[in-house]
Length: 396
Image (cartoon, rainbow, N blue to C red):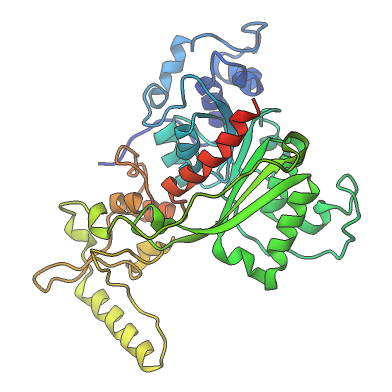
């Protein structure tokens, strides 16, 4: 059964839900005036800037009353969640005691899933100045699984200062990374945590990653990075680059940050499978025949392209956002000569490390597959976040 909700997915709802999630705290202030105008038609509810308890009419939003992943009652630190997807970073940071004070995600289907699990509609297009205007002035950590876009090198000298037209703005303008760097520059969080595909390091012969690293260093942050494999935590081979930075003005480059130790998988595919799944996930004879013929054709040419029939005692290939099309990269064998099957959306969520109380059925199967394929491995992000927050908490 699909999860039901009534809140519209737009920036007005983002304002209201951010305000209500933070009601009674100073973190409601950036949303207060606009939220009260939307809810009550007035913005002069009090002089303090926030209300102690939500008004009765706020119960028009039942999704906010009980969500699977509420923030901590007493926050140890604050963070913002950019390019939030379905909230993998948010779960990780909340597990370490963090309170999310702002979220942004442009995809409407991802917003639905995010709302179902956190009771909050993320703001939309982060490239817009209006969207950025709601970010609280102060927060501890910026999190972003930003998309990788092509960078054009402007050929400017590294000596050019950040405040001029020829600093990082020239080198990254027109890319979504620019918006991340811009927010870091304006708000100066104590730390940032970025995640991207492994190939970011080799894109454009290494120039893309060089620009990213130099840009972050120009902002006066020490930068740590490492390609890490999710198989340490889930039965999936999934390599991603982790980029972590700390404000040199606070930590002086002496934060002694280390990434968690990597090791081989300790769980197997069989551990994440449901005891019974719908027949709709079994491949049709036509599709199964096509995939076998396709694999044979490429094998004859000496290529390795083809489907991935998994060893249930082993791990899977990398789950992709295109998994909904044919499921070919991860197929589950079935007994009795039966055609193999796709993973169910719940199994995909488990493969990414999401707990079973995470609501994955707020959207269609197609969208759920896309969301899982685009997501982070939650326990890996949690482990790295723990190392970051240890350093942040020492600075408080």
